[in-house]
Image (tube, rainbow, N blue to C red; front, side):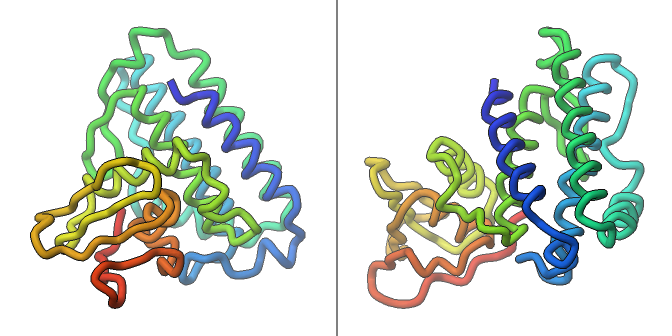
Length: 229
């Protein structure tokens, strides 16, 4: 279970949020069109979305993550312009609700399958990884000093494999430093080989880095990738 790792990641993003003043919260994040206030509000509302899904797993009563995509977007917009103190209080309260919901879930319920946004199914146990991914990736999106190089190695490796499995990319061979074997998207035949730290490859595949720390063989530019998630 990844709950201890999620707790540590949550503590890190809370510390970053606590260091932001009103001007910083209103400033741009790394996500086009979103301020840091948008990102902080999204992290909080995403915690509430997973509370809903954990309640579904515990009670058997269908409780969607969000009422609708439109409601999700409206909630983020409504909260984005709040001052830093309100953002921090909201985020702390939301993550506490998630922690409480996780603590209340009986052991058998972790194996219950629920339906995430877009109709994707996942067990309650898988939701913990999903929430960890949201926290770590959006912490980088805050542009508040936390970068992919700060991701724990285990998280970087897990994210890398997930993106490799999900990404509809051109043929590509990935060679993370120290892994000992390649990860292949599509066919390895005549595909460019991209080498570098696991966190740097994962961040590039996930659209969180231009990949300047990566090496390509044969020499040339990095391939153009489709959007992930």
